[in-house]
Image (cartoon, rainbow, N blue to C red; front, side):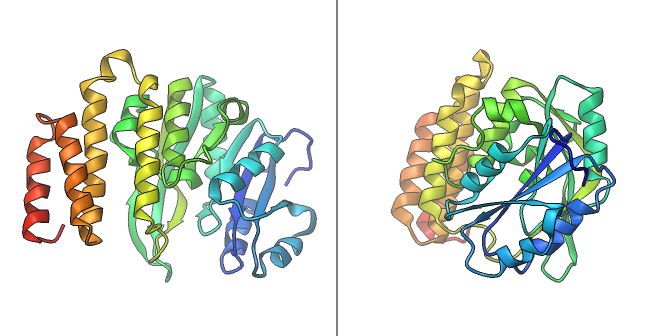
Length: 300
């Protein structure tokens, strides 16, 4: 790491009880071919050996310690502590390949109108087996409508993103009032503020493990709905009507399926009814199929 007051890149790793994985994440940052980097790790109230492991790195990284506030709170603390021209996020259980930052900084430097970029990610299970890929969409760029329409448009998720720090700060960072939709919320706001591009080369490794996705359905549903509503005005005017209603109805259908799997038939049917009122033509067939499955007990 180059000890500079204003490095090119600030890397932010939020860590909560991450003793089992934090070394791998940190080491992947320290092994980057691009060296003009500062590493900020936010210890989000860990009660395991995370703090001791981070201390063992000495001056190779900077630790910000806070009471447990959750992922968005920890990332925002890291953003506030960052000095770099760009900010990159890495979840503590993921890792980067050595040329990740080099490729992304070159792209952002060559195209100053880019607000942020991502790269294809390889998906691994806890045993290190490749179980898939989270690739760029069919085109190398994406509009705010594209990100709104498919939350997977930002390949690799947060661990893949490199963004202009001043823009992230101006947008207020991650919305700490949301749950389960805070990443997509920021990507939508960034896409509305500037261009996005994705590097097709696999540069990130994302861990997929049982229990890594929250099962708090009601909180995640509330966050997804709040995110969809709050960002409607960022869409082009012609997409704030039927296009937005179709996406909103699709979100309700997704949570209706989840509710059915959890045994909440009433909740599922309520969301399906609301989805039908929003988009009877564009989502009608989907809604009818899910409704029939809920009523007959067919697995979804």
